Image (cartoon, rainbow, N blue to C red; front, side):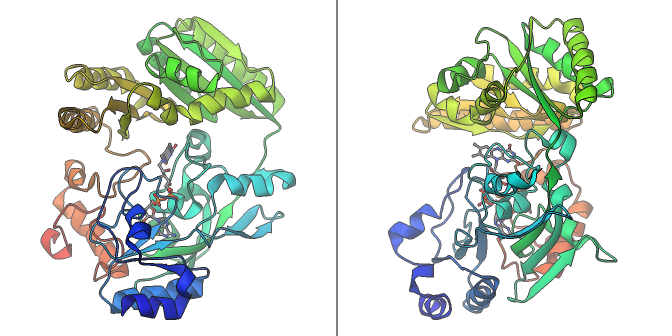
Length: 459
Ligand SMILES: Cc1cc2nc3c(=O)[nH]c(=O)nc-3n(C[C@H](O)[C@H](O)[C@H](O)COP(=O)(O)OP(=O)(O)OC[C@H]3O[C@@H](n4cnc5c(N)ncnc54)[C@H](O)[C@@H]3O)c2cc1C
């Protein structure tokens, strides 16, 4: 019944119900959910709306899915249902160069947008390290960040209008220009629990006149952390300020030949973009701060190729973990920048005491840590130890005045941890917002809110 109705509405090639097709949609980059009843690949907003009506009619949950690179289980079907893949809705629909904006479909790959508008001297700023594969729809779902969000802001700062399909299959639009409540802001980061995004007008930025990239190496990770605080404290906001530690540097270098020192305790990868004069000032001031904090090396990329190589190492870092262990678990927590040394110490203790190798590659300028806990999934003791260490790191971040996610979202993974930072009243208020959009919890159920918590329970 479900299958036939979906085929009638979308066509047979847009509906998958074979076991071997469905199995792959049970996963995302975090974990495995339940095998869905069907997967649909709509080609238009009209088809999305039709499929929503059918799924709801048949009592099936609806799970929007981008590229499945999410790291908190946001796209896994927690209760089965119908997965909506946007692989066929992956186009740039319109570019408005004069107003520096573009209208795109949700399945468009993030990096493809910047490539598409490059000849007009424009780019799309949010750049998750997954940008070669993750989609604009998924980025909107998680309010994705990335190395360059330190100065440009996260996805929410770049979404101007949304076209959405609600849980009834009705199509509507929201805009930043709307008078009244900022529904666009509410929808970004809602992880597919409030509506399905079917297109978006996104902000484009003009490519900067000059881009400079520097690498600073340190013998001591605390000195590198102090240098981060020093830069921001001096009133300089680089476009990116990333840290990589001694565990990750040799692995990244072996994989990407990025030009990183393999014997440093930590390196900072720093980028500034803007006008030539301003960049010269940034460079001399940052060099002074690095020296004052004991940097052993300070290097400026001399060419675009060198710049690209330094970035390729950073952006490919997660892939390089394969040289250390068969599997990694990535934690995503935030602490105040001044607490980075304590947070890194907490990571070392949580992992060291359990015999887990931990590497660090993270958005230091934002205080957004991404400890990478290396393990072998085939060893149940290691799996248990990684879960324990991950939780301990999360607790430490909260105790240091931070929070439980910087950019990966809450999804399935962290929903029970939400009570660590929000009171029952807070959760009840959030639940009421969800109730307005999706009273029956048809859209991506079992996500964000603690297990078993519906509006009634938290009221
Ligand atoms: C190697 C690697 C590096 C990463 N680096 C970063 C990083 O630097 N910064 C960062 O923020 N994240 C990063 N991530 C995490 C991940 O890439 C992001 O969360 C990304 O935004 C997910 O996009 P996706 O297309 O894969 O979405 P999915 O994982 O498929 O979905 C993510 C969420 O969005 C919802 N969703 C998808 N499409 C829609 C839609 N059309 N309408 C409504 N909801 C929708 C889903 O239901 C789900 O809740 C990284 C992941 C990997 C594997």
